[in-house]
Image 1 (cartoon, rainbow, N blue to C red):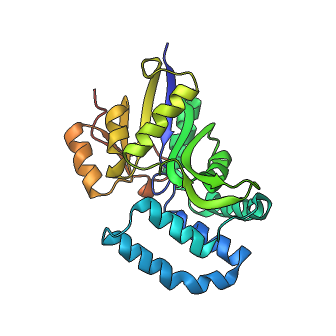
Image 2 (image 1 turned 180 degrees about the horizontal axis):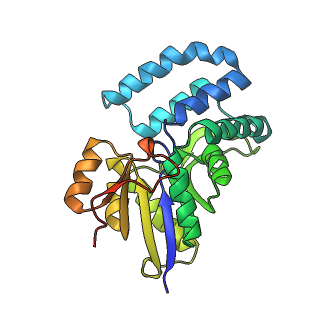
Length: 240
């Protein structure tokens, strides 16, 4: 019998709003409020990314340096991460996502979060939501154990996310043939994982992913408008 996995993206799939910039601002407020004066520079780097002058991974690194700093001791970040995760779980989780996670847990599926967000805070959110495993963008650690702004490995995004999920399966001693994967995401950048999964779900999807999901016959869920006490709203069908 195959092991059943339920793999969830996080930002705008489980959460109503993205978490990366809010985390940077949350950390700046608690570690060094003067860094908020650098927000105009953050806007400039975002513009540079929009103009394709820098890559997404470099954008994340630069903005982390600007608002959090480089070489932060873990003990300084731990209470910041804990308070941020507590706030996100209290205010930023879609009721329909909570219901889906609960249903997958009740069905015996192993819960896995796969997100482009940094593990340093995504894992804290995932733990509070009951996820067993987290696949996320990693940060480098220096010789003194301090957290650096540089990404360790690849950004867990697009094809990189699929590669990291495959590497995680290998690490867990699971072959692709031995698992049944149900995958949820809101964004077309995750289409490589949608295509690779056994059951693809477009959750709270933007227009491009909705169009693709209709062509492919994937499930479409809108958790943003669901009554948490009602059945999940779906459209389309699971791809064979």
